Length: 119
Image (cartoon, rainbow, N blue to C red; front, top):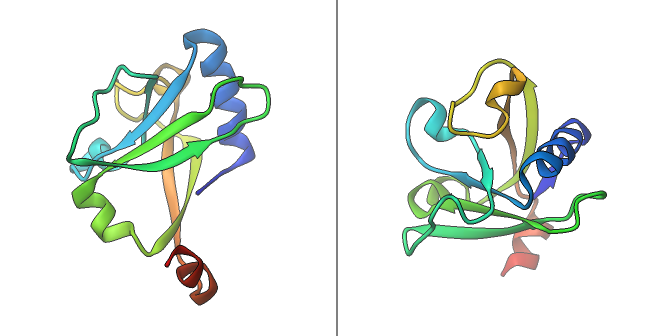
């Protein structure tokens, strides 16, 4: 999992405003298929979610946990994910919405070496 520099810049701003952060991506339609950024712990995860890991961002003291619905993970399990940010209006529930931008996931298939490393 990766993060573009433009996403890191925005996350530093959001972290300064809101404190520790987290991402969750559901398998829903429309904005539900985009990564949503929340204050850490505000979105309740459960047995139907998969913890993908955490992002370490220079300038943000706490790691940012990244979660995905288990159903969505089944589709994306063979991909390398990169969180990016683009102009446009996303969900009103995600912290970046007032900034006039939205987070999105860019993906590519994992290489054979990456698949082997994952087991």
